[in-house]
Length: 440
Image (cartoon, rainbow, N blue to C red; front, top):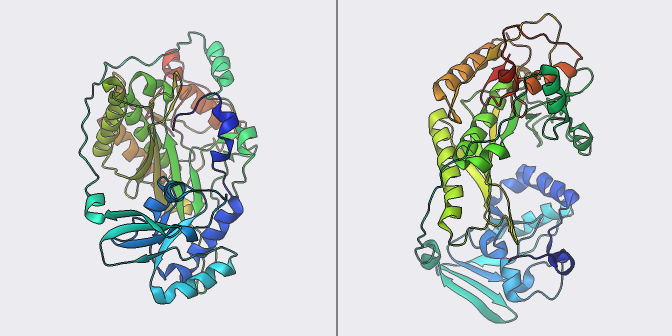
């Protein structure tokens, strides 16, 4: 559905609204081993609504749309079948366990309703108001419908814009005023990062809590009758990577650098590559039949694929949208890489400088025509991972917006520790984008 300027007034009720208390109740239910052990399969009600969330649970299904709980009255059968909704999960249970599961849901004040049954006829059927409005063979659904083809043309990549500063003081003032680099503390403090008391790193580090951390690190929550809450020392670590200016000029290089940036952030925090996996968030303009537009996600996916094969790190999930257009406006080609790993909580390090007179080393990753030199990147990741694992590193950071200058500045302000560059350090090198480089 394409929106217009009038959609704000006419379609406001269609916007999905999150419900945090309901989400927390669902989390508690799924963490309850008594409930989790009864679930054979589950799906969230994302795109496609009932048709996908329930329709994927078994080959043969009989769905009663009249029993689907509704937020609003007046929805017809089609709307009930395909509408996305928040804070809902479809779970597949053994028939004898249904009452037990519904009782456990009731203990969390969650509304649970039986809406479908599994059949042996290998068909997806939906009934509404006494009529069968859907009756499709599973064999047809598994075929993904008619084969589709499209032409793709990848345009010649442009060079991402660069800003050079020939005066150090002028450059520092400029980057500190940049909205991509300046402090986001006011925005971050709108969210409570300590819910569950499992946080390993606060959003801002140091005595003055001013150095922004580059990862989310939290102990994995435990629960159950025989497990003491919070007794684990295993932490999950998340990081993201994305530079819209590179992606807009060169989607291939933008996606490649996004993967590199997210993975490097994990290593700088003390999480290794051995248990690292990726998830991608893709957002592109509406494609239609324009071969040039199709070339944008195609180039980005090639860049992301090459980064995965180079680093031997795989993407196991993701989310995509090809509807980033509003009238004549298009979003820039977007592929955000999210990297996740696990490590011992006591191996994680924060990014702020800890004490004066420390030695600071730059592990410079080379860049050839906007393409990261994979050999120097791997060498630097290995060196950093080894030194951090041996406890030889107090702080680590990878430059992003603002390059080395912004990274060093942010590492300083957490404990208000000064920094002096070597005299022979090139001024332009300080401010340039240094994807994959590491400051130890």
